[in-house]
Amino acid sequence: MARIRLLTYNIAHARGLSLHQSLRSRARIRAQLVNIAHLIRRLDADIVAFQEIDENSRWSGSFDHLAFLAEHTGLTHFVHGVNNRLTHFGGHLHLNYGNAILSRFPISHHENVPFGRRTIGEKGALFTEIETPAGRLPVLNVHMHHRSRASRLKQAARLIEFLDHQRTHRGAHWRAAPVLCGDMNNPSHTPDATAMLLGYFEEFDNYTLLPKGLQGRALHTFPSFFPRRALDYVYLPSHCGEPEVTVVRSYLSDHRPVFVQFRL
Image (cartoon, rainbow, N blue to C red; front, side, top):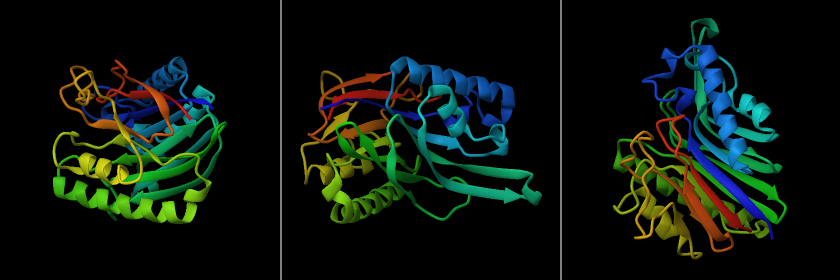
């Protein structure tokens, strides 16, 4: 068995609490990422699932944020799931961003799942298989639509179709059922995508949806300064035992990160 520490975090293009990343200088963006790296090292995270992380975008300094974080955390395995690519004016305007996984352990397989075909504003999911000391762990990092419930339900259906395919063709090599995490952009107590996916997972295993408080209600993660909404989640299967969860008090983004430790 191994103790695994997983962090899911929408880092909002490293803009912090600013209204938009284009209002921050390259130096301020880099300083913000250094602070995020310090947080990851303090938590001693093994696997980090990022949402809204830039590969190379003009509005956030024109450098690879994921490679920068890998360098400053010492977590050497990483993969970027870019759902948005835009280049105009001979390359002078470029916006490339999406989800990412940063890991202490090797990533043996990955697939990106964009939910649509827009060049900017698109959401999606990044599927990885991570070679932990206890075996291969499938991790799906998700960012869903923030306004439209109908769009989120379609995105959840797309994820279910994708996971059914992965389970059939790759599931024999997994140590546990998939862990899903990310910014779901909807609460768990309404008939929306979060609840739909939990119902799907519970057809196969006894899943735990985190974070939740003593009354069983999801803990709030947004906005970070004074959280009023539950948007960020981790779905853990039964093989991920003895979970300990923390909504980390941090103001490095408009979301608070969710940190989960479990035994695999």
